[in-house]
Image (cartoon, rainbow, N blue to C red; front, top):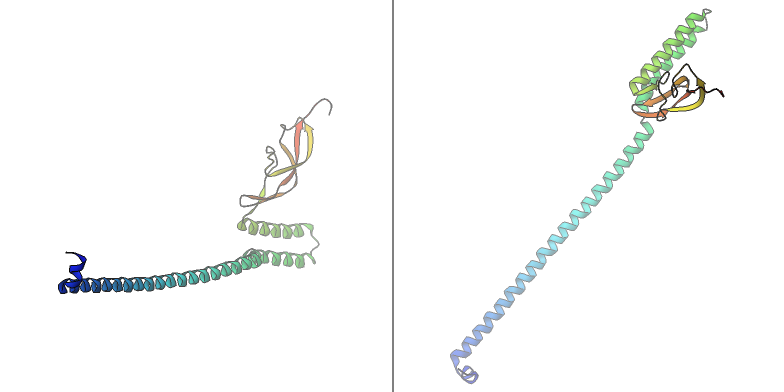
Length: 189
């Protein structure tokens, strides 16, 4: 069939109209689908945006809470330690009050020894320990040599004397031990 026959043939015209109508309907359906898809995408984007805003707010609240907890820990972190030391202070005060009337030096020494022992016990429970160095080989990680003495009595690099006590908190050195270390005795010395 030629184009001329299509325009004059009523069946062909009806078919062409039907095809155009179907194409329009298909385009309308596609347009409706596109509009529906756009609406769905907008809703999805809005949901994601709301989730993001809530998550950002939650994170900001978490950050603020952590900062407050850290400040509180810094401010009151020593509270438990100090509660353990307060009874030692009480013992020192009682010892001081009791030695005012005592003339016997041994009683004063005993009161002092009790106070020091109690303080050392509390500090040990907290994790503070003395670093023992006397007679040991010099260790620069936990000791500070402030003197060296040439001698035949001790092996070289051996601690002869502790000049100031050193302390550790668990495994961290708070203050190294100040020591006198033996060196090899030469004829010049």
